[in-house]
Image 1: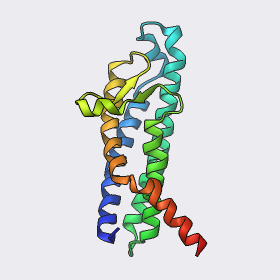
Image 2: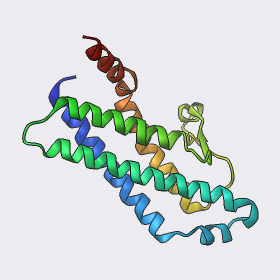
Image 3: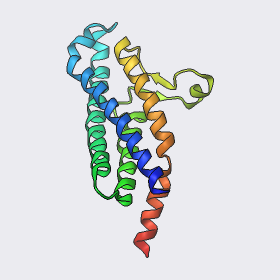
Image 4: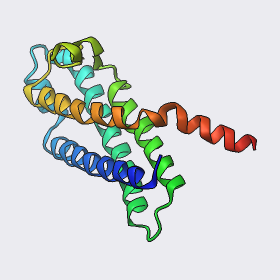
Length: 167
């Protein structure tokens, strides 16, 4: 990939991840487990679900911050380091995009067929609060974009690294 195109992808990923992290941090700083459980239809049933949801959001925030800081370092260097940039984008894909679409707590899942019909691709396992629903759906748009832009790093980057290790 040409260096200018790689740098543009780094900048775009940096800006989008920074925005995601700001939204997640704002939400997590203003929301408590007790608060959202209290608003659910069955507090006892929802407590574990929301605990997993908030845990997944915290992991996503930490991974997102680490990834955009790494991209920031890449972009601030006097000389653009292509290898460092490719590794940073690989980490964005594997530690942020995959974490969003495959949450550890399995609080939602993606149904790719819905994206072709214009409906939201995220299927929630339980009815969630309007704040969580709108945040999750907004994040899904960002992560869909990042996934499309960074899919190359899912396979080609690893293959390239393996090939260079052999030689």
